[in-house]
Image (tube, rainbow, N blue to C red):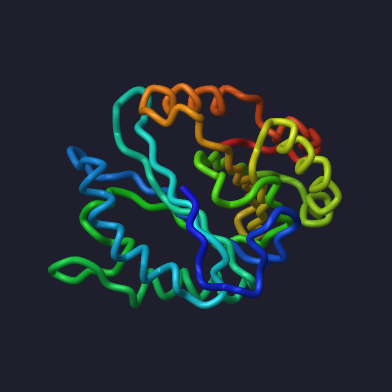
Length: 225
């Protein structure tokens, strides 16, 4: 699910996105919490969060773990600058409060565990209009090499082409050098038949598709999460 936000300095059309910072959160939801509860609990907060300085777009993916049935959700947010992405992290971690009794956003009882990171954007591109983006795929890896930022800048056009060949509607290549991490976010269109079964099958098909990490050189010695 993609939501356009308040930054009018970046285009929502097809083509390159001139963004420099990103923030991602991977959230494990507490047991026995339903999807409706999640959306009701997150909706008001998401409306406020979408108005933060420099935010271009946010994607709010949700899925169920195929083995234990736990709900996994999160957010992928793109910003005009790394500084604004860091400001968003600080604000959501230390200032923004939700619920009764009030608690800071990432500490709310619905969330059992949160992994959140600020990233440098190596490149970001929309292959199709944002309103057509309906399914997301986020992956991250660690590496054991040096000079990786320069390598990623060289690889970006190749990775972008690989994402487009896989039918992606958008592609982001992200880097967090302080933790030696790389991540990729891609969006895909919803199936024309929008019922739950068609959506489930489409999500499973996308998950089975080979990762763009196949393009990474072996010298990176990368490991996937």
